Length: 243
Image 1 (spheres, helix red, strand yellow):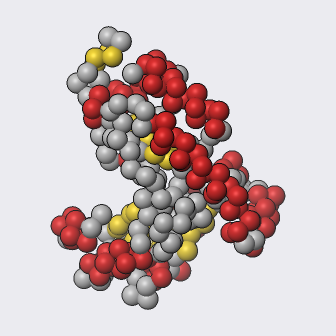
Image 2 (cartoon, one colour):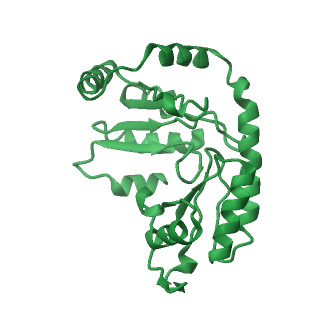
């Protein structure tokens, strides 16, 4: 998103800006300079609160250093930083997340959350303390592994005509453009959009992907490479076979 696109999208009714960096699903990362340019637009609209989803903060392949909107003094009191331990620390099932926010927002979130769900168990909480007190260097081996899997899946997908991929800078997804298949009939099924394509892969190849419609981009599908090398090879082989 450019500053010009942000400015053009803001109306008198705009209350909040949400973004993720590293991004799910594209793996793209906002640089500090890019965030500063967005902040310069937001300065003119003091009613807008920013929610910055940074749960993939530590799954970064070193192209663009991590930056946060809350780094800027003029945005600090208007930014809610969302994070958790599911991704970087492979604690997905523990269901522990957290926010850094202005106190009045944090108190309101606490009040709301307390009526919706409760019982973050004490074992999970103690484990999270241990995770957060350790250096991020302790998980570098995992990031290195994801980097290898990224290289693997991009190489395999390039062998399939019709997939157009960016190279993710973080997270563990690829988000290929699959419009080359729209309007085509595969095994008797007409592919009209990304949802059709994703369902076709599920039914014909037994491979689960996510339609880009779920992320506001109906030209793409999301594929996760948070899987073993063997599973990645098998999945892409099945996709290739049914296309």
